Length: 442
Image (cartoon, rainbow, N blue to C red; front, side, top):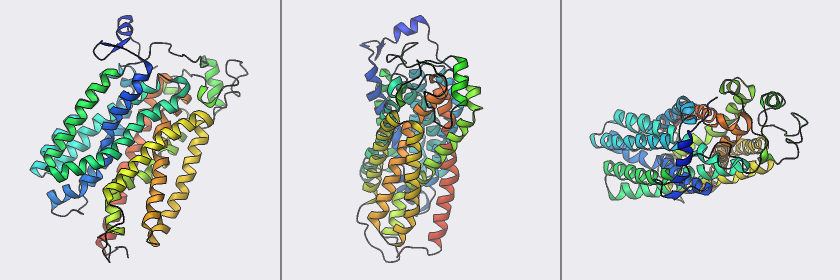
């Protein structure tokens, strides 16, 4: 089992937060988690840096080099989360959280140096690798620490925490643009990293794990034999609580009140359900991930001044990115809440179906030269994209036990890496080829 087992002294110490000055309350974890994820979510506003960095390094704002940094960062995030997931699960969330934010800040400092000396490889190392490692550690440790306080509303709690990640895109799109317009690129990274560091360092002081056996709502707990029946009777997320065993402790519960499972990490990873969930999560994120990192460029080349007949787009790209961040943020809370009510599988199938419809209509909107239609489709898909991230921690907790949340969640995030590195790089390469051969819009 991968499970944090604090000493009696640590349990007593965790009754207080913020350097032992404030008595810990469960609700404190949510605003603290939102602020921490808000800072980590600044990575989603990376696209604002693409054109200025490309111009500074290569002399061409559409060169396409800076975009790769985003894919490296998210690729490293997923791999780091998978590697460190078991370690995060067995250690205090404040410890892993501080390590994550310090490494994330180091990535910003290295990035500031990289743009100062105009070395794109150093930028890949600084923001892509170093900041990506900090993201992987900090992202998982914060979300899972928050969701464990609310066993009856895991989807809502995790959704609220990761809402901050989507909110980071909303706010930092404007912040990054202001920094670029009023300072230089190197100073922008220095200020951005320092701002994030201070906010996260204060917020992490309010993060602590719930005491052992924390179960205020009396959610049923299954023993090992019941777990086996429960797992065997389930498809991906289809834990019909009344089916596994005819046990009055397990019957007549809401979707959010599913029994708590205790299985080993090895049993979880050998489950067919886990890898089906992995495939579904990958399908949920791949489209929006490549759009998020390229939206300003798409608007410029297809609907703006990069067209064959240039024109100003009806909405500035940085505002479109900010609004996209708002939908990303909204989806994480709404979908997490919905999954607590109607169930994880039903909710996940719904958002996947919506995304399939959206993707099929995106080429139609582009060929019709419908700027607002294109944005409406992208924003709808982004809401579903954020929703997947909002409910996935609760999904794995329901399926494989609260003691495996960080480990299973971390490995699932390698789907984020695959979507970032393969989908993102392929999309950028295809777009570069398309535009370099005169494939401009109307």
